Amino acid sequence: MANKFEDICEIRESEQFLVANRDIKPGELILAEDPIVVGPYWDADISCLGCLRPASRTCKKCLKAPLCRDCSRHDAVECDFYQHASNLSKNFLFDHFNIVTPLRCLLLYRSNRTKYDEMMAMESHCDSRRDTEIWHIHDQYVVEPMLNEEAFQQIDDLVVTADLLQRICGILDVNTFEIRGNMDSQGVQMNNLARGLYPKTSLMTHNCQTNTLIAVDGMSKLRLYASMGIIAGDLLFYNYTRVLFNTFERQTHLRKGKYFTCTCARCNDPTELGTNLSSLKCTACDEGLCVFYAETPKWECQSCGMQLPREYVNQIMCEAREDVSSCALDIRNLEKVIGKHSKTLNPQHSLVLEAKQSLAGELRSMCMSYDVQNVPRQALKRKLELCEEMLQILRILDPGISRLTGIALYEYHAALVDLSRRNHDTGEIKTPELLERLQISESALKEAIGMLVFEHPTTPEGQLTKKAMCELKELREYIQKVKAMEEDERTERQFRGKRNSNAGKCKK
Image 1 (tube, rainbow, N blue to C red):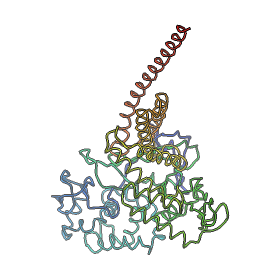
Image 2 (cartoon, helix red, strand yellow; image 1 turned 135 degrees about the vertical axis):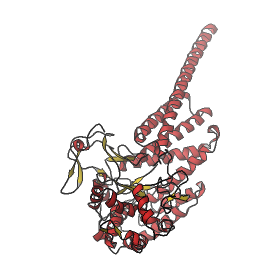
Image 3 (cartoon, rainbow, N blue to C red; image 1 turned 120 degrees about the vertical axis):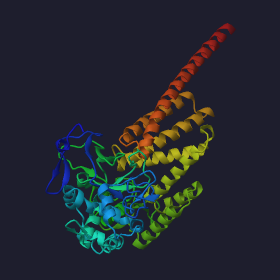
Image 4 (cartoon, one colour; image 1 turned 30 degrees about the vertical axis):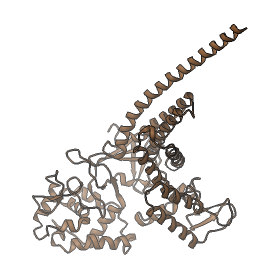
């Protein structure tokens, strides 16, 4: 790393936050960090302990760890532990796969005491979690299975207790980051999502409008970039929830999973910075929107001041959520759901946007199933409309370098290029307009690449970046052909004009 982390940031000890030591440019690398623990997500499918791809056999050495057909070993300390756990059933890990990551945390006590102490210093929110639903779930699927087996009750001189296991589960739930596109030693991408524990990165405070971007490479190394310019003295933020969740959903997620209430600018604005992801149509006046006030909470119309009854809100939200989640991935059904709930919620409500994202995905799949010349024009127009709408919202809620915006820009460019070609072929637009639209597409594609270039090649976004770069080259070549075509047409028009003028003179 060209710049040392300590030169760019400092850890504010009193609050354990990351603060910029100097101005940081958009796209600048802030931190590269290896995880102290990597493991499968909670409730994940059984997977190989070597690479986290689907498991198909058992380790020949310890006879207990699931492995894939390509991995002959897993972590040496872990394997040794299982090998000497003679009383442990051969099927224990297959029956209790949720214990894998917590046990890896415990095994740090044996393999690396410094990392173990670093992990145990991290926030667990045990007091807030105690006797909650997640506490009882971990008790059932981690604590009890482990403490009922002699092998897990003590590691060296560390006595394993229920409180210790709950604390570790809390540390994992509160502090881990998702790892996507991880590779095994042969460079093959894993299928299952994993989570990693990154001590420095976890110190970032939450804000629903982040100023950083996280990318994880194929060997689980996390890289933290500035997604926008950060001024010296500013906190480094990361969004712990989803950008397109509405305020009610984000607040619920943060209270249940992170044990705090967000008071950022977006959460404090009832209109969500004008996007209205939480707003509902007023039942008393035709034009009004009932916006969400998080501190109350209540939905109140900005036009007439009427408050929607909580029972009504719960009813239409539950109905919309059920329709969106259970809707068959079919274009006609999705359009019906969007039309129905745009009238009761609003066209930009987060649940309607979720249905629109599904619709865009179905339209993308349908377009890819046709030859370029035969793609239904209406499908291209609808896809373009959805991309434009999503981009307007993402520009506000996720400004700067954004993974979601990069994907939306790519899809927007693809739809615009295909639709413009079709319209030119049928004579609906002339060559100069085709050229203008292609140049707009080129600009969008360049911006998409600029946002997705930080993604590792093994991730879906990394693969998309590679594809986008090839398409940018092809698009530029096509633009040159259209420019030549426009020049030929201009020359032809000038020639015809002179010929007609000469013909007129001859008649005179």
